Length: 380
Image (cartoon, rainbow, N blue to C red; front, side, top):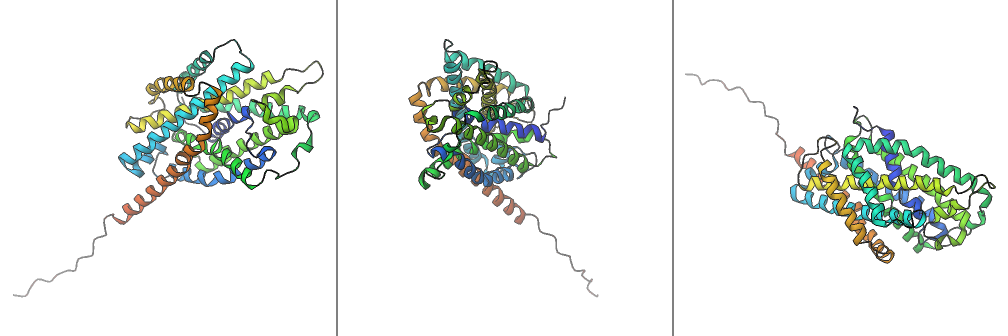
């Protein structure tokens, strides 16, 4: 059975991962109606980080992200970096899981307790990740066209309910709000591509890393722009009053009495994208934890023993740390500060350490032997 991930599958995984929770919340920031501009600015800011992650993956043969961190930074510094990235992934997957459980609970399953929904999602995630990362990539490749069709269909059907004057005036938010909104989208979700880096060791070696990164982030940007503009044009200034603006914007779509309640179908696709995001973050956490304890990770299923324990920790964190909406909002305010270290400073430091180590190794290599001069024997 082929266990390598091709470029299209990896691109689809990145798109599904980055759009996972942002499609539900609408990616609405402090910039208000200028949020779509913040998304474009954040895309250009994340391009250097794509180059950094690509360079880290290509530092040494194998494209093993965490093994390269250990090699570049050394034993203890590399483990400290991997441990921090593990904690970041566990925090994010707990937050995303709680968001989607709340979404399912509020919108569709009011009588079902949130812990039951979380247990069902994590149970499927454990089964999928134990089968290997290539199964996750194939599921993403299969689900991406449905997400694309759902967004395109809702945008077309919602044209009759759109007010294009809701876009005006452009750049009303001001530089400070634009900068705040750009930073928020840069860290959540654009900068989260760090979690996707651990999947590249299973990708076909013939595929280049940066083009796959670029196509995935660009596709996610287009999806988010389409969803954000649709929500803004349909809901207008009231978009900030809704907890799930994407769901509310789609709920107004109807064709007479024949085609109604389309938000139910859209909700399924949105939940699937969120499930993929949880799986990618959980996979990254297992890879980071394996690097901390120096466990073998040479096969796609070598991290399978770590999946269930990490999932149990995620379940506990999502129920305890984010028990209420107020606690979740309070933790979200600190997320960009923690993301600066995990998404920017650590990758840049790892790349710099790897380049310095490679340069020193090149200089300290064996010097070529000087040609010896032939000596003549002394005359008697």
